[in-house]
Image 1 (cartoon, rainbow, N blue to C red):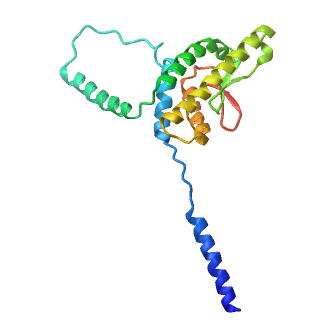
Image 2 (cartoon, one colour; image 1 turned 60 degrees about the vertical axis):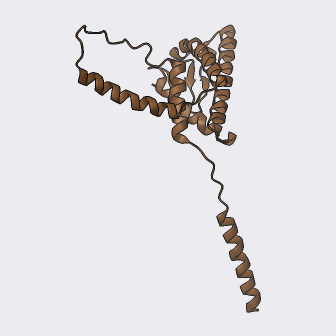
Image 3 (tube, rainbow, N blue to C red; image 1 turned 90 degrees about the vertical axis):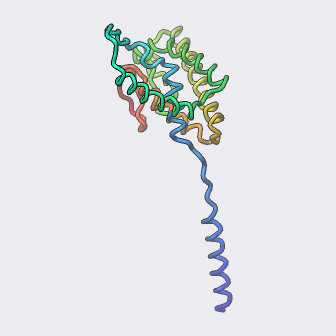
Length: 197
């Protein structure tokens, strides 16, 4: 009787040992995805393009400030090269999304569209539009979201990330869409509520 109990305990221990050793780690390069999102969304939204450039003062700068600026820019340029995520499909999607984003901007400005926490555009107030405009804006939102979905899949492919991780990529991009949104645009919080930026 003790022999049977010992055998069962041994078998249970072996089953426990085998199941506890099987751990599936899904690789998710969070920092690389964040950097890719910053670069790609920045290109799409042309971040900082509307900010005025400093006018030259006409006085030559001394050597040390120029050297300091050069030394601080060069390492960050090399760091950016290491995480560069780009291919023909991503470039094409960026171009299309840039055009679509400029078409959507007036609707974001009016509060008709919002940036969803999942990385996709949401039509918030369709009833404030005429039937004709509602259909037009709905098609615009569908086009943007289809291209964003394709973009997230391409980023996953470029970074060799499992397809099951695409929603995580979309959430990282959602943070960048929010950061580059204009003041007054509606942003969805992770809990589902909305706020104006």
